[in-house]
Image (tube, rainbow, N blue to C red; front, side, top):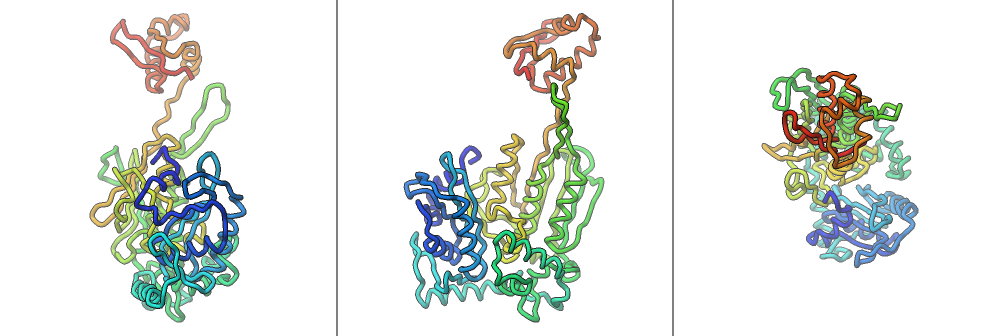
Length: 459
């Protein structure tokens, strides 16, 4: 999938066809009915700007995306978890709407319910509506909607809640009817006055660990090489999930080493992290929001080794999301904690709802890094992100000399010494030649006096 666009990958998945709708043009009512039906079933994707045969037709991507966002938050109830954005497809752009399976069915559009019958959008009959309601009542016993014992509204961080509401209004992910923390959390059934639910405490608790001891993350820097078993440093972070997300991001930004790179003929220094910050932030967000919060003894673990970072969270991923450890399959994400995921989405911490795994994969692939790997074992999910390879520093002699050679040509150590009029020592020449080999500029052929260096690149 690494060489295939996301929509092309969706089209190649025949078993996902009922969850993918292609619309050549845009009609708000049609799109909202499909969104509502997907929310009441298992989620899905809508591509606007492509005909049913897959040909791109073209739409005003920005205008359509904005209109869908506005209609979704104003006309669908309860608050839906959808992501709308422009997607590359056939040398142009289309609008891709990713709809999550709703955590609070039944969902309605303009006070009418919709669901899926095969690949058709239909209005459910009374029995089917009752089934959706029963499904919601059954799921109401889930951990995030269960009452947090002894917790009161005053135990929540009101300022943090106002920040999230403000961000949601600014991004168009909330409408004015959800313009207060009380309304937002009430809409998501995370607060039912006077009861505060586990999800609200996990997200906004001022002293979340006092009520939920699993509200913590541990970061350990391992001592030694690749198979290190002792740790050099450990940091235990406690707090609500939004705080943990920010504190982990700050830790990576301030504590992980930077790589500085100079290019010959350039005076500017280029600094970048050994690990892309966006990848780490996305990985931690996924671990926090998808972790099994009912495991009171569990915690998100981050191990920093010499060559990799491992992020481990309680709970396993659904099957068939990953093949061969690093091949991400197209999928509609099913968050373990869907209502808490909505708060992360409103806050802007889940910018690509349902696409986190692919974003991590694709960014590392685009940077030509070793691909990340996912593994489920012993009731846990482990993500391994590999470090940037060490940068080989080239001195001025090497860059000057290699620029005079043609790719495919070869030279000897004596040729190199002669170029510098034998003004450099034999050990210096050996070090320079090894630099060329380590940087992938040359290949060493032969041994002893017959050794030749074949030029593979000259810049």
